[in-house]
Image (cartoon, rainbow, N blue to C red; front, side, top):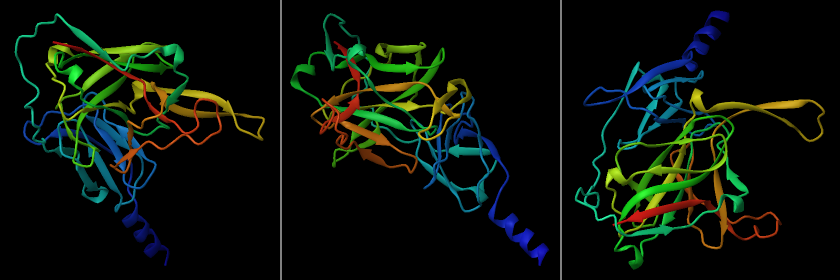
Length: 294
């Protein structure tokens, strides 16, 4: 009976899984891949070399791989190999064109002030994306190229990094197709800062459909920190592992905010329900500023 029990246990569990995420055509490593376990609070990011290590999982657990410019891959742990290959996703680059720019005029969308930002999005140790939709307007028509992206960040460590993902909306107004097919990595200074990512050399033209700008947490060793806190009713300090940076939010009446969670689905922000002055009934949108040029 004991032998049968051990055999059954071996069939439903696995040891720790490690591997490398690669491009299915070039076989080159893919950096900063978002990796989550379906319907579980488990997730990590691949490092800059595409390497990852997952905790102990069951053979029927489904792991989800998501990377900029690639199709989402879902794979059971029983089918794992050392190399996880992702297939490139065809992206319509019609609005991303290379041509001489004038750089004479500029326009700012969503001016941010870090002193007025006191609410932050945290990741809870899971790979997530928080995004904001920026609608197109005629005032953008003469300054269509994105020069830089500014986000309010709060980092507990030096040189934490995060990823920017750009999406086009689908017919339901949800983040859908990638609008740019490469990682755009930002680096944060320690403390509460406005982090600016310069993208002028990428020649990204603001689309007439509007644009989702997403800030993605990278659950990698470089970003990890441990902090202490007191739990209600307990005298001893508790410890928790988190990953920098946190992203600033701004309370607004209109809802432009979306979050991509571990189960590979986008969710729209909900109204703030707590009875706090200037918060209740509003939406916490990503504190985001775009600088455009011609």
